[in-house]
Length: 228
Image (cartoon, rainbow, N blue to C red):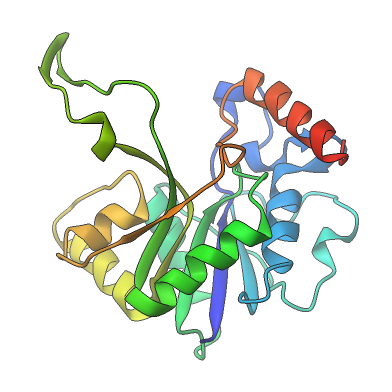
């Protein structure tokens, strides 16, 4: 199954307190984007890796050997919304691609083993995502009032990559566009079509770097791995 990865790097870095795009922020000498790209290039099931940059970024950050790999495609500019970036990323892929893994560059600690597992799950069922069970009790809230407490055993925190058959994801994006619907992740768009999405257990280290304290946590993870 020919499979490509889109690495979404179009997010801004305001919550990190940085002027540069979030994915260009350095972590132990390498940008978040470079670390995500390197992890995905190391996955045997991934044939191509397509970075999707901020619309005005112009070029990749200056990062050593991450940008020299036979799987790496030229970057494409993203859009204002996540769905726009995914759509533009899909347009840059070779026509032979059958499955696509959509990954947040800010989840730069993902392991090739986790990516392999979720890709193989999608090959079987057409849609799969990494996720982890929540440890906190979750409340649905409107205004400042609790309206529901879903069973914790049914609640998982979604991660990326999320992997789909290319035609399925394109159809889901088109439906969302027609309905003027913005989802918070790509799996939600597929769920709206009534297509089952398989959950593959992710690792706790595969968190999204959003705030300054997340960078410090990521540095500790890399130190534990001997990669700092």
